[in-house]
Image: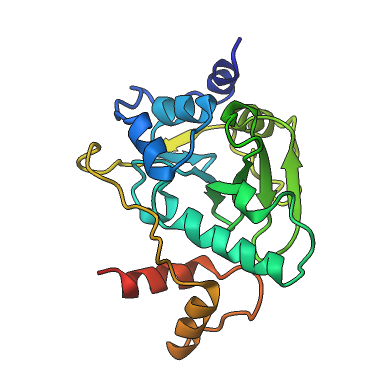
Length: 228
C-alpha cells in the first residue's frame, strides 16, 4: 500500500472525487522548484479544502490567495522567517530558504517542507511552527505519511489542539476557482518586507508585535489594501 493509499484509507476524499485539472509542470515552473509526488497526488485526489475542519493544505486552485500554493503567502512567510533568523531568535529546523510553507491551520500554525535535498522533493520532511511562537515540531517523513499519522492519532503534534480528532477524520472540499485553468496569482518579487507591513499596520491602527509572526488578519488587510 502506498502513502497516498494509506491516507485515503484513513481519511476518504470527497465523493464524487475532485475533477480539478492541474498543470503540474507549469506550477513547478512558476514556483521555480519541483514538488513532491505525494503532494501532487493529494492535491489531485482531494482538491482544495480542509482536513478535520482545521488544516488547510495549500493548493494551486485554492479559493483564497492565502491558501494558494502559488499565491503571496509562501514568499511572505519566508521573508518573516528570514527576518526572525537574522534577529537571533531560537533556532529554526533548517535555513529559512530551505523551509517552504505548504499548509496553514485555523489556529495560525504553518506547515513547511524541509526542502533538503532541493532536487529530491520526495525525500522532503515536514516541520510545523506554532502560531505566534518560536516552537517547532518536526516529522521525519513525507507529507502524506505525516497527514496519515496525525489523522490516525499515531503522531501527536503538541502545537495542534488535543480535540483535533474528536469528531473523527473528514475532509471538507471548498469550491475551486470558477476557471481552474486560469492563471493563478504569482508570488511577488516585490513583496513588502515584514518591517514595511508592520509600519503600514501601525499607521492604520493595528497592534502588531515588533518581532515574531505578523497575524494573518493584518496580512489579509495589507494585501487587500495593496492589491492593484
